[in-house]
Image (cartoon, rainbow, N blue to C red; front, top):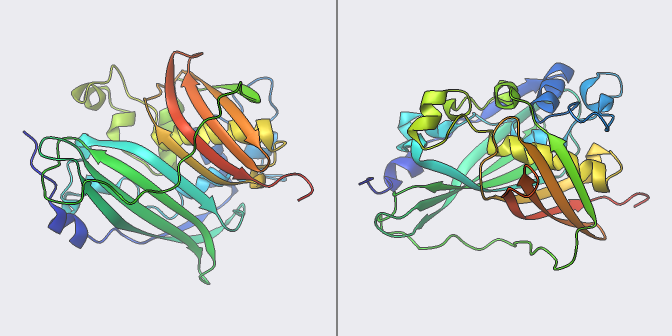
Length: 290
């Protein structure tokens, strides 16, 4: 049986503050990592060519982060037991195609679902310029399998969630992934072997390495950009998702989108409607002319 979460060790662990110097090459590598250029019917030159380069807002998820910090034994976590449950992103200042950003990450909440059940960890990150201007905020929830029973609150403080409308979607867009998708995505910083090593994937019950959750989020972010933002990356400035199933490199991700003014609700599936991989998605966009 898994030991309860070592909250003292986790809360005393200092997640490294990270400074990222990035340039158009890094922007292009990130865009390729989330599938830019793979859909033959969509022109994404502006995401992969340094002339008039657009920066995907979801790149803020990988900037200013120390990577998968739970792999550090000092955190007290068994990283093989962690599932990525939810992710939130809010852009305050559109990302430039080059710059230096500093990320500060901290654990802000724990929940105990009971002995033998999951523990929940919420961590938040702020990304700022060297002068202190807030560029982006992110928040994520991890489920640590079997790590409950440490005596904490049973639930995390509730954050607003989206509810998918009961009508047909206003947009549906399919975007392919490549067999090398996870291998490319990990070049942006997340080196978790679950996404590249068949033995690690098999040890936790997957038939082969899976795509990073944040990689899936980036692909769905592209879908929102093309379907509802006229292909303008900076028009997407808030995005929240709940991960419900893994995506395998080579899958096609189908995103259904409901629009209500500057608010988008969305749900994503792998390979047609085979399996829902993102549910209760919520995004905020800038409308043309606003």
